[in-house]
Length: 185
Image 1 (cartoon, helix red, strand yellow):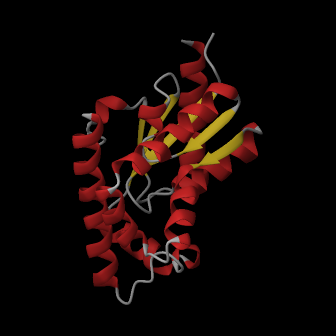
Image 2: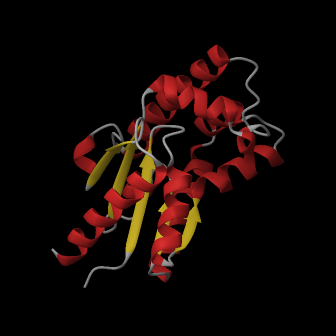
């Protein structure tokens, strides 16, 4: 019998947190957020998220510890949503969702998101775009080197949704429909 675990990953500012919250509302599942843990660690070190990204490149043990936290949590829980960039890798038996978004829409979302201001203090749209592209490339390179995986390989996921032109409710509805199908397989 499958565990009721949904892992959500995707492009930066694609709506992972929003989808996690919507699914929690609809399903009553608990949400585990790796990103909040990473942002907390960055803040504790007095770093922006980009600076912390560089720090993780130099401290692979901390990166592994961050990723293993989702695996450990999933082993002990059911009815769970994991909002984590490598959630699909950490919990391979989960329903794996990848959210895509047009880079210009992602940049606008990130630049205007008040919740990101403490760890991503962008001074301009151009700086936000450069930082988002940098983070994506750095993470992709680090995870390829560290784990031998490519998060950009869409074969890793059960469902891929482009959130660029969809409302949060439309994204949630698609995810729910496909998740229910997956549970029945």
